[in-house]
Length: 458
Image 1 (cartoon, helix red, strand yellow):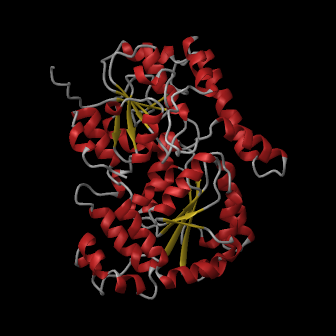
Image 2 (tube, one colour):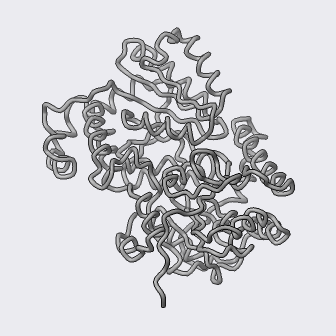
Image 3 (cartoon, helix red, strand yellow):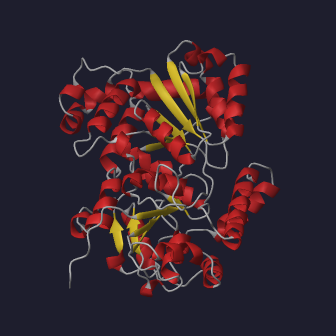
């Protein structure tokens, strides 16, 4: 057989639905082929539901689906009716119990509906346009767009990045055993799950979730290790963790970063991230209220992530005004917000992660950021896939469930004194994959498949 072609770039395709699917491809922008009229400015990445020249029929299908999802996500907190509607939607997207192991290849109603629309032309416009260009690898972070490429006969290789620690049957096509889609998966469980859906083993590659290079610092992990060492200083206020696990820290971080003279260059910093639909913004307000005194005294820095949602940004501005903390904004309170684009927001978010000591979020795709040595305080889940992400975080020891946010100032102090969060930070660093971006590049561009497969990432 002839050797596979080596590429310098690929078509990176995502969808504008929430944050997860776009966050998964943001770290791949270096390898994205810029396509005039299709790619987003300055990034090369193509949004399948927003590209220039998208036909009205395709646009309507995407807009309808996204609008329904966001409305239901926001309705969940409403008593009785909201929970009932959300539960029904969640049931349609459910992930079946893994055990007993069995054949789950039979397509669900959701898969049949998706393929019904694709066979009627959904997505053909995008694939036809790419087929007229160089046949580069097609890399996408959403199952529907992977199906577009396969069903409409894209002429290059097709890759699909899975974005959760376990996935539903919706990620596999109508006839999985015949599929030529290559899956780039974050965990061994996702690989096993796809096999139960009928995907062939040689079409699945364990890569880990793509994490931002700017938080890693290359093969020697310079940025990551330095950030983690400073983080542990702030998370281990009485030195209990460092005393007990000095050997482990020295082995993985190096002598210099574990010296008793090594200090953090920032106060304890908490980053709370709101989801793409703006859900749980009230939780951020409760956190700020409970930590008001510590913030006022400069003992704690708080980053509240508004993403691209101006309504959430303005909400938090009003919260800090009510708390009498407006003068602390841009001093030790920072509102992470972008009016430009989600990719501009990702850049800002990644920047503050290097000085973040605690990431507080629902267990979305941000669960994988535990691999950066970030302890995750787990907010209540929204959707069944987040239940699986929560279980994964707790099983590797990188995430802890939040206590009552109204009393954050009390229980957080105890957690810091015990060294519990320092332990979670180190567990994430040791147990969660961190080099997904580099593995994806190797597989897609350089066809280095055996080395990646042999790593048997979690």
